Image (cartoon, rainbow, N blue to C red; front, side, top):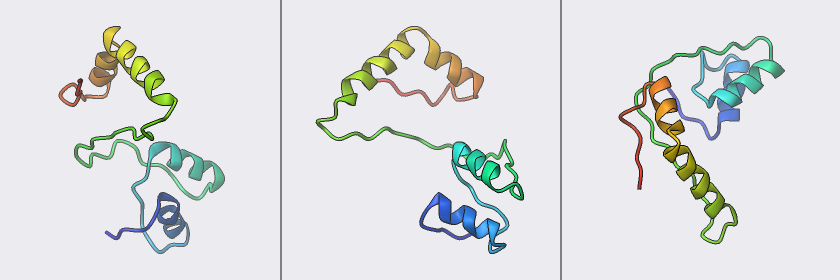
Length: 95
């Protein structure tokens, strides 16, 4: 296993035959497959847990909107439903 600088670079190595596969974001993989029909996407690969975050500048206009949207999703049960659907019920963090 090797590390490269970007998801694009990882996919280019696969396309050139320099790597047997690459681990990239699902949407990036789907776009690559649409552009390069010789590639395929293998889903359901378990790699362990991964925590994600959203980073915004301190003065971003999106901060309040994002926080309100996440709060609404938490309050109406949508986050719990999604967590259950994807087997992530132990991974929700609120605060």
